Each structure stands twice: as C-alpha cells, then as structure tokens.
Length: 157
Image 1 (cartoon, one colour):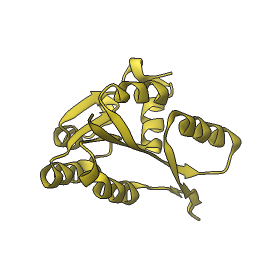
Image 2 (cartoon, helix red, strand yellow; image 1 turned 120 degrees about the horizontal axis):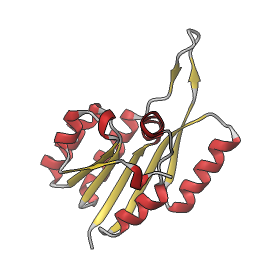
Image 3 (cartoon, one colour; image 1 turned 135 degrees about the horizontal axis):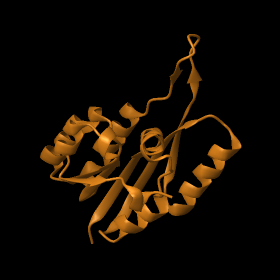
C-alpha cells in the first residue's frame, strides 16, 4: 500500500477558499479522498495560535479527522501587521519525511514551495500533489507538482 504524507498550510487554505468562494474547506472529505490512494502515515496541519475558542474547536476537529496540529503564536507587530508564517517549518517536515513515503500532498497555493517539490521529487523519487484554489495557486507550484487538484465546490463545506 502506498504511504502518503499530507502537509496543510491552514492559513493559506482558509484565506484562499474564503476569498474565492466565501466558504470553508472540507478537511474530512479531503482525508477520505486521500485515504482511497493509500495509507496516510503523516498528516500535519500548520496553523497560527490566536487562542480563541472557535479556533480551538477547529483544531480539535482536525485532530479528530487525523491531523497533527502544529501551532505558532500569532505575532502582532507594532505597525499593525501580523506575522505567522509556517513556510520553513513545512519545508523542513516535507524534507524529513520524503525518504519515508511514496507520495507527498501539499495543500497551499504558495509558489515558494515549488523548489521544495522539485527537490523531493528529484532526490527521493516521491510523487507530489498540490491542492489549491485555482485563481490563487502559483503557476510555478502547479508545474512543480506531479498532480494538481483544484479546490472547488466539491471540497468545500
């Protein structure tokens, strides 16, 4: 059975689905769809911890589905902007898991991950898949993946 690792850029998926469709992503449906391909041995969801009760309910729901939640604190800068980027953490985890799995699935539209997918594909021979909102997924990321899956109505709540 094929071993699969899933990495979810929660903030990216939340904001792109909300901006494009005004709806939320259906993680339960995604997990069921991916389990049809093989055994999910790693499932990480990367999020920002604001400490509010709605967010904690969402994180509990993700845990119940089978995700391990990785949290970073929400940082409000003095100029009013916010910081909460997981790109380096996601990249490290993908690289560390690439030798243990047959397929890596990334949920993000962030073009910064194109080099990462190229690297794990060429160095480890892992198949890569990306799930992203079509209008908000970097073309370079789509081209770097072996398979691109459009997040559309069928994967929304």
